[in-house]
Amino acid sequence: MVATPRLLAGAATGRLLRRPWLALPAAVLTHFVLDAIPHAGYGFLLTPGRPLTPQPLAPPAAELALGVALLVCVAWRATDRWLVVASAPAAEVPDALFRMPL
Image (cartoon, rainbow, N blue to C red):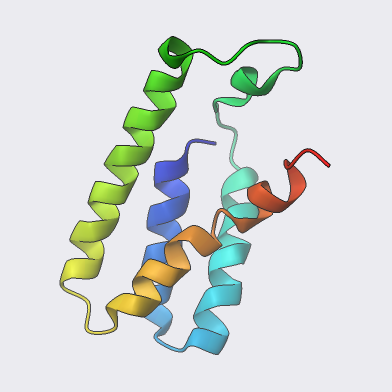
C-alpha cells in the first residue's frame, strides 16, 4: 500500500487515543487493518535484479511527500503533536521489519 493512508491512519490513532502506551501499538495495528483492504502499491520497484533509477522512484517519492505534508497539517492543531508524529511512522513499522533484506 502507498504510505499516505498508513501515515494518516497512524496519526489519527495517536490524536484520538492520546495515551502513548495505547496509541503506538494501536497505530501498528492499523497497518494490518489497512492491509486487509485490497490495494495497490509500489512493490514492483523492489523486484530483484531490477535497477533502481530516479524515474520509477518519482511517484512513490511524490506520494510520500504528500503524506508528510498532510501529517504536518494533522499534527499542527494537535495538543500532543509528538504523539501524533510518533504514531504516524508506527503504522509503517511492519513493512519496515518484514520487507528488509537480511
